[in-house]
Length: 161
Image 1 (cartoon, rainbow, N blue to C red):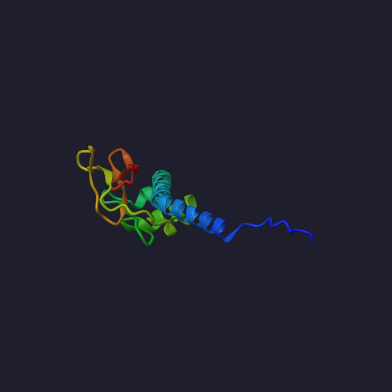
Image 2 (cartoon, rainbow, N blue to C red):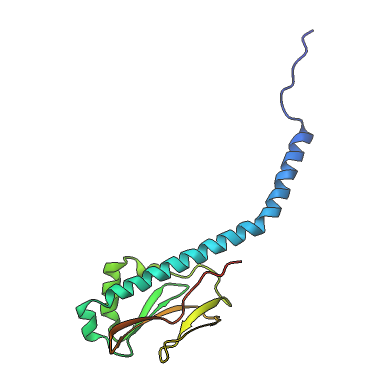
């Protein structure tokens, strides 16, 4: 009689392999979650920097220069979307749309509460670092004696662990 060659895995071998894979998954899960959060924060930083650059481009536009005043426009990048408020915000929004299409849909996706950010005082111009617990990042665009100035009042920065 012919003997059959069994070339498959036994049930015990399969259970051992699945068990090892589960242990590896449990061990790596916290690190993977940290990587995901850091990638969200990196995306927020890149979006914010692109918005600052678009605001700098807007500061060279004649139409915006005519309507903006010293109180200027505040751009808030929030968890739901990005908005503007202040004198000349409709002109700034039009320029931002030309420069950075889809800027209104950019939003904060990282968990930033309690992180450290750079804050620049509008009166002294000094940059300090302090705790931040807000829900928005802000950019102020206003007219000064030297023309338009773009100030990052709430800026995300990389301080990942």
